[in-house]
Amino acid sequence: MEYKTAPPTVSASSCMSPVKTWQILLTYLLERHYGLTLTDTPFHDDRVINEHIEAGITLVDALNFLVERNELIRIDRRGFSWLEQSPFLTTLEV
Image (tube, rainbow, N blue to C red; front, side, top):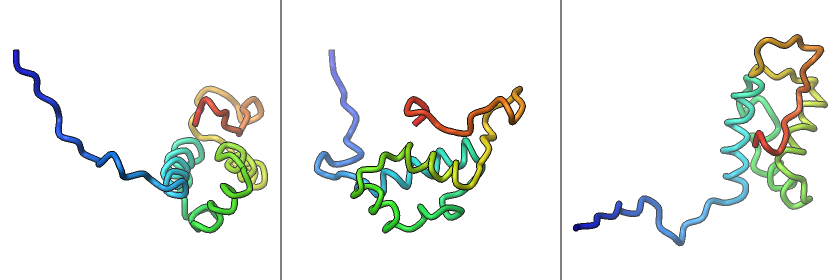
């Protein structure tokens, strides 16, 4: 029996920066749940993300603060009125 392994696509020594990780996650979450792009928010600036990371603020807390401050409404839930929906994300959704 012959075993074949897939060639590595990313070297083991490479590691994505925390800022880049936040950008990728925020891009997805903002688009999916609120219909926004990263450039619609202060998080398009690497320094803003880095300040949050250095202050120990979690991504979900930072995003929920943005949601609260701007009174964002989630667009990913169907069949509920806007009065019944919580606009906030949970850690399970991240």
